Length: 131
Image 1 (tube, helix red, strand yellow):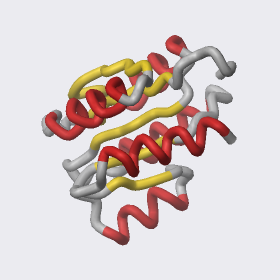
Image 2 (image 1 turned 90 degrees about the horizontal axis):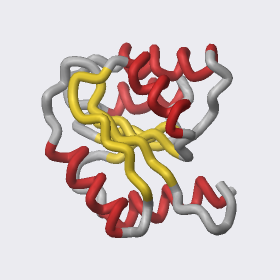
Image 3 (image 1 turned 120 degrees about the vertical axis):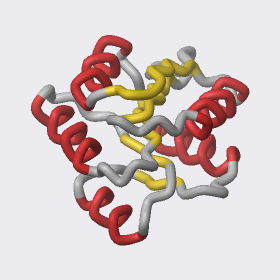
Image 4 (image 1 turned 180 degrees about the vertical axis):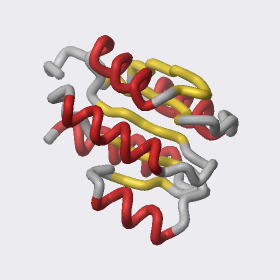
């Protein structure tokens, strides 16, 4: 990302999870903060997310997950490596601590739990993209 470009974030709900409200609210927070958001919506496969992220040349991927199917996120991380595509991946949702820890070990950069503030999400994205 050059200095004159906006931060570009892909936001999606992975797998069969149909809980979209959080992803839509976070997308609005990011747009209000001046970021460009590519919102894929619900029922996205890891392959669809990685393909869109590469095509759109995003700076960050944000995944909403409430369905406890974290294997989909693990597959997303593997597909990114396989495609030599490296951007921070953040996850949000009702993720139990032991699952959050396992996702971090697989390469997820940050987990945002319910009640995370819009400021904390925006500040985190700005800090990791500026590095």
